[in-house]
Length: 562
Image 1 (cartoon, rainbow, N blue to C red):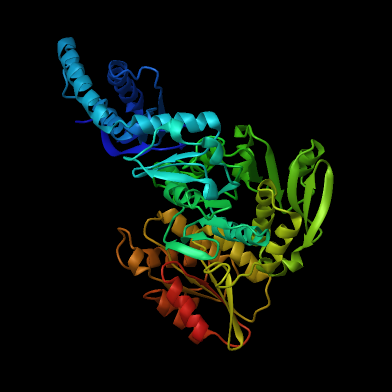
Image 2 (image 1 turned 90 degrees about the vertical axis):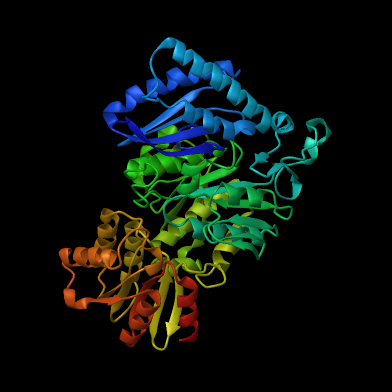
């Protein structure tokens, strides 16, 4: 019986949840008690092989989590596919005899095989360009097909198999552009789009990678989830981009690592950390998720953190770079101590968004002048606005551009589609949002509770890849939100291994367990049916909150016609 099961073998192309280096990684499922033995056996096979390949200076790393182990080693960027094969070969083979001659024979054969593979995969011009760019301080990016130096309008790209010699490239001509990377559980996309409005006001061309699209200026160049390293590289290589705004999701950090090496981004932001996607890629709990989000710190020369977020505060000791805090409470001890030590902060104080630097606090703008805050009722968007201010300052944007962006950016289909879009249908109000976890829904419930309404309704559903606890917590947030009706909707295109009806049953059970009246619960077969049912139920003065996940375009289209 094998000690472990190989779950995945892949390349890590940048800083990642294990460490800040590129290389191969294998993910293993095993009993926790076997982790030490498996890791030691892996090293005992790997290290002689690396020495035989001339890679003796490469280093190893591991990551342990309940029921699993990840094993990685550093490797040259032009040899990562072969490095993955090497990593798999080094896994303990329980059928291999411990007889030393057999081990020596296997090792000799492996060295010969992998040397041949490395000669075939190796790309010396790529490595020389990388070293030359690093010496010159130019941004270097590579992937399967393309190598580039510089960023945005100063970038130049070549096909990976048709590279020039490094000495022929004028690195001084390939300058950098301001770069921001944004992660967190909730608010990433809204913050990136708000920053775009600020860059627009500066008269510069923003490039955005996000969960919805790649955008340069006001042109969407590709739809889809581009919040991973591929999206970041696409924006950084676009010759029209002046400022790069890169939404960075935890999935890409876990699968491939960051697109940028250490210190390549001007500023990175961690908006908040809340339970979502737990149980995926070895992330079992909130602390492990927080550690994953904090991978992004490696890329930044300046870090922005949320002083109101417990998990971020707990990890401030990991930050070695200059730090800016944002907070809804200007007078918190953390903020006041930071300010007293000369630190920078964006805070909410007496209905104003303020900026503090070098012991001087300036009132920037009243909350009432920022449309996405709904007069301050949308506290989560007040926090997003504060975060955007911090990032914009590090990008070198002028105050007038920052304020113009805050005042012009709307919760509408043009500026922020799918995020807190407001519709007046007949004589009642409809809000459409992408909230998909308990943290996000609780923020919306707090907001809607502060808005006048005769009755309130929420539609509730989820994809099948969330665990039962996440579904229960989502239902509990809805039950605690003071709504008068809940429509539970099936997500038939997002079952992801669940049976039809399974998720609605969990949500309904959790609502009733939380004390929500069963007679105030309705069901719908999909999002469109839930939307129509909500519109049919609504009367004058009601407020509907439609949590729209997989049929956003259709739901928004229906509401525009209603």
